[in-house]
Structure formats: C-alpha cells, structure tokens
Length: 255
Ligand SMILES: Nc1ncnc2c1ncn2[C@@H]1O[C@H](COP(=O)(O)OP(=O)(O)OP(=O)(O)O)[C@@H](O)[C@H]1O
Image (tube, rainbow, N blue to C red; front, top):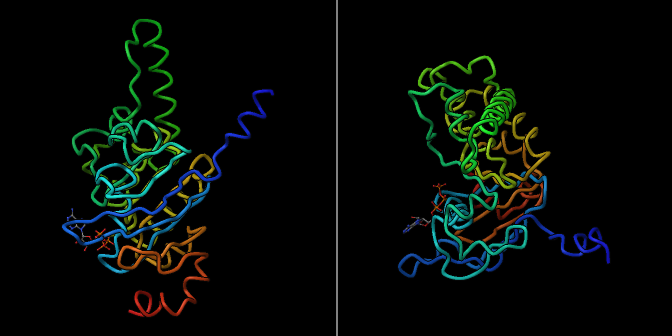
C-alpha cells in the first residue's frame, strides 16, 4: 500500500469533532451533552442568548476548562486530556474578548514576538530565520490591514486595529483552527466589514469558530451557525435555516 493510500484512509472526516461534551459547575451543566462537527476551511458561528454556554465551549476546546465528560477531537487527536499549551502547539489558536497586545511595542514587534520560537538557532541559521520572520510579519500585516503601520506603537491603534493585531498575533503561529470570541464588539461598521473580509481571506488555510451577537456580521461570514441554549444545541444549519427556526426566534432572535 503506498503512502498516499494510507494517508487518505487515515484522513479525519472533520477538523474538529465535539461529542457528548459536558461540564458541570457545582452540579449546574453549563455545557450539556453537546455534539457538533467543524469541517476544514469552514467558518462556524456560535450564537445564543447570554449564559447559553458559548464561551465555555471555547474554554473547553482550548483546555482552559476541563470537561466533566465527552470528547473533543482535533484532527483525530483527543484534546480533553491535553494541557492548554499543548493544544496551542497542536494548532488551535484562541482570541479572548479583550485584546491582549503589548501596548508599548510597535505593530512589528507585537507580531515578531508571536512568531513561533525555534530552539537553539545560532549564527547563519539565526540570520536566515530573521529574514523569514520579517517576511512573515509583512505578510500577516498585509492580511490584517496594518502593513502601513508596522512602526506604530500599538497603544495608538484604534480599537478595531488592536483586535486585528491580536488576530495577526495568532495567525503568525499558523493555527489550523482559530477561535474568536466576539471579534467585532465595539467596532465601527466599516471595521466590521473589513473583519468579515479578513476572515473570509484566512480560511483558505484553516477553519474558524466565532462567537458573535451581531447578526449582520454573522450573515457576512457564517458557513454554518450553531445556536446554543442552556448548554445544548437549539438549532444548527445555514443562517437562513436558523433564522427561520421558530425556536431560535423565540429564545434569541426575537428579543
Ligand atoms: N467557571 C465557572 N464557574 C461557575 N459557573 C460558570 C463558570 N463559567 C461559566 N459559568 C456559567 O455557565 C453559564 C454559561 O456561561 P458562558 O459564559 O459560557 O455563556 P455565554 O453563552 O458565553 O454568555 P455571554 O453571551 O453572556 O458571553 C453561565 O450561567 C455562567 O454563569
């Protein structure tokens, strides 16, 4: 059997498979027997009322919160037993609601320090690496609309630009799954549009899970929407499908 056949047989069906995922906090199930599947190159949006369990789902996937039971498989590797940093190394990047950039560093420096570190690189090799880092920083800066601001200190960026910079700091690590918690909160309409453009551009090489309340933005980006309610899936499918679902209108969209 040749290598191609073997790798085809072993190819995972989904980039991410969440099955029976449950977490209890003092007996309260914030996420309750949840199952969903994310394809490669997919933008999945998770919506739902406050307290539905959306952020907790991302916390469980990235290892910040330990599951009570259930499974999270990323490229067929079980994540629930892994540590947070191991999950990052496996290729899962997570952006929290508040930007965690270094305000007193420039855009360039923020991106540069996020570049994955190689071990023990010295001399000519280090020189070669510097060139590769610079090229990669430039490339990412263009993707996040900050190529003209590489020498700007991050503290002088607009709120939206700071959010993009943080996305860039994750992108430079080349995650295969990127998770974003309310990335357009507080952004102007123009910035929201550009963020949609950014996400649609970066999924060529990865999948993205986004938690979002802004329905216009969801419409612009979602391949598929998962609606959470009380830690369970209320509805799932295209934006048009979930928007037309009376259960979703009742608990979320009608409010
Ligand atoms: N560490 C924790 N300990 C106890 N309860 C928690 C913990 N984390 C989350 N919860 C509870 O779990 C439920 C789900 O919270 P979560 O933040 O995941 O909801 P959400 O859908 O992201 O809401 P929002 O839209 O308001 O951000 C809430 O009732 C919350 O209070």
